[in-house]
Amino acid sequence: MSDAFAFRVGLGHDTHRLVAGKPLLLGGVRIEYPLGLDGHSDADVLLHAVTDALLGAAGLGDIGELFPDTDPQYQGADSARFLHEALARVKQAGWQPVNLDCTIHAQRPKLSAYKSQIKQHLADLLQIPADAVNVKAKTGERVGPVGREEAMCADAVVLIHRIPIL
Ligand code: MG
Image 1: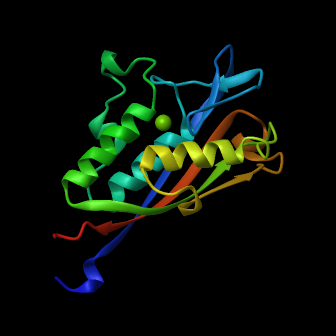
Image 2: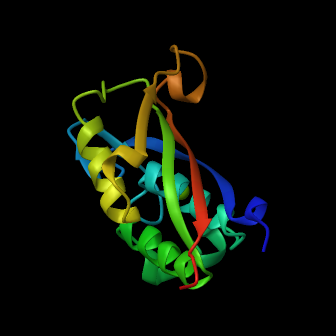
C-alpha cells in the first residue's frame, strides 16, 4: 500500500444542553460548576466529539450508530466507555491514533485550571503520549447557545496511522 494511505484524519463535533442539577464532565474530568450537561449518557460533550473523530478517521461510522441513545444500557453511561470501545474497533481495523486536537466551547467556567488534567486523561484513554494531545477552550462571546450558557459544544480532530505489519 502506498504511504499516501498510511494516515487518515477524522472530525468530531458534539453539543449538549446545560441544565441545573447535573455534574459537568469534560474529557472525563469533573468540573466544579453549578450547571452540568444533559443527555442520555453522562453527556461528556468532549469525549463524544473525540469518539466521533476517532471513528470517523477509521471510517467506522459514528457514536450514535454504535451506542444508540435509545438503548437503556447507555443510560447515564461513563462516556470513557464509548471512547474505549471505539479505540478497540479502530485498532481491530488496523489503525493507531497519532494525535488529537480539540476545542471546548463554553462561555463559563474558565477551563484553564483543568486543561492539563483533561489533556492527560484524553492521552490515557487514547493510549498516546500527553504531548500528542492539545486541548483548547473558547467562550461563545456571549452570543448564540454557547454564549448564552444554554449549551456547550466540542470539536475534535484525530489523526490515525496504519499499524505496521511486522
Ligand atoms: Mg453527545
